[in-house]
Image (cartoon, rainbow, N blue to C red):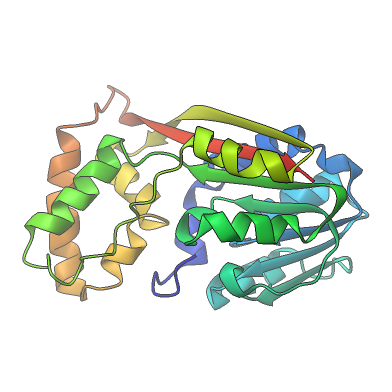
Length: 261
């Protein structure tokens, strides 16, 4: 994850059930119940680590994140679980030697550059037959992201927000072509989740305040943040339908990869 994104564990966890469901889908495909030694890189507040632990309660698990707030929340969450440890570490500089039966990266690698070198390096940390299990948001073409970037580009903060947006696009064919020569098996799929968010457009903003909005908001002062979110809300109101019960159905596409060494 980006170092300047000002990650907040409490905000991120507001929609924990929705954020955790893709972890379960990924771990089911990765046969996580078979592992003995695993790493959860970009573990956030520990919800993905806790889910992994439910599949493999006796496995040795290390969780890493470059946000001290996230690591503190994860340690509190899994306090007194002796086979789980957490450490502050950036994914691009993570130097654990391995060898792991599973490396889990849930909604984390989209913030890390140079996937053409990162993914092979992670594969080298796997034991033979070990699995790299990755889930990344694939939603840059969704209205919420397009309007987020539009708000950043058209406001008085335009110059300061250059480069804050996540622009990397994740193409399944590119990943397969890169990984297939290095792996015994590569499984890639894409799923669109439809999250029912109570609270109208404000709930959509709350969702992204815990993730994609952070790089933008962290560069603004409180007054500017309020102005940015006001403009963003106005734009979102024309893109999403609020149902009679106050719910917004938020489509959220995600890309999944399970690469077996």
